[in-house]
Amino acid sequence: MRLQQPANAEFEVMDCRPLPSSPNPAPQADNRNRRKLALHLMKVQAIRIQVSWNHKPLLRENDLPTEPAVRPLSSTRVPPVNLFGLI
Image (tube, rainbow, N blue to C red; front, side, top):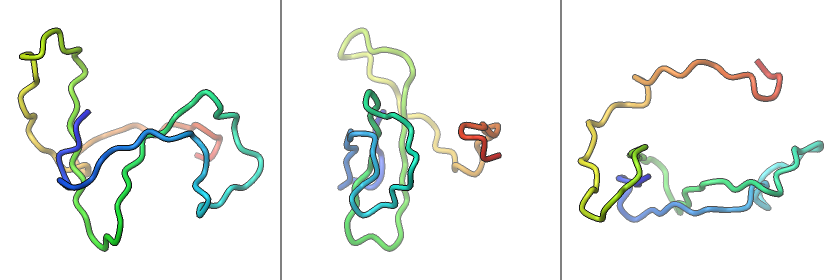
């Protein structure tokens, strides 16, 4: 997975728990063995986030994938998933 934009941002892997500044309603699922991928940005009012990934493992260092065509997220079709009985 590669973060294309913004150039000065980085992914961060964190414990899967609410941030100190986030709501933490009970009950929460047991997330002890889980991690979350976060993008930390400071003083941002508007942003374009662009991420690319390649599902194929790299066999050699020279096997880096070519850059994919960029599509807006609005063009992606994902079926709804009922994870918590909310839908």
